[in-house]
Amino acid sequence: MPRPLLDVSDVLDDPDFQDTTLTVRRSVVTVGAHGRGEASEQSLPFAGVVIQNDSGSLVRAPEGQYVRGSLTIYTRFPLTSGNDTMEADVVQWNGLDFTVVNPIDWSSYGAGYIAAECQLVPLNATYANG
Image 1 (tube, rainbow, N blue to C red):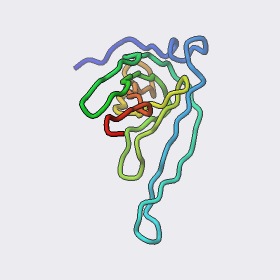
Image 2 (cartoon, helix red, strand yellow):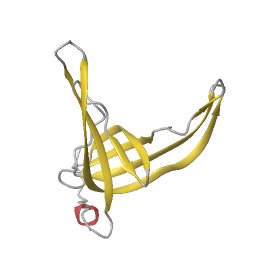
Image 3 (cartoon, rainbow, N blue to C red):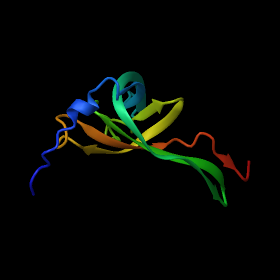
Image 4 (cartoon, rainbow, N blue to C red):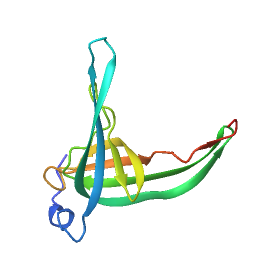
């Protein structure tokens, strides 16, 4: 299969186009002295281009209601949806938290880029049973 000939790095790297207010919370899990997982968290700033996929829609279910939203971030920062030693990254953008659910290798369109699909963390969930 031929690779795309379009390199969008000039656009994605343009400071007028990038959002520099992004922060990622990354939790690394190690096994402690008592055999239990211990998470250490760090917050790191990064830049990327943010595209809203779903600006937020109310979902009503028998167990309660919550707001669902998603976005895609195009960045050179190595976001992760988790592995054996790390939990999924949580990206903070515009005062909201989004969990990285699917980082996609996007280097065919710009060296080192990923397109990270992220889902809104439903912190505003309300449950019928209180």
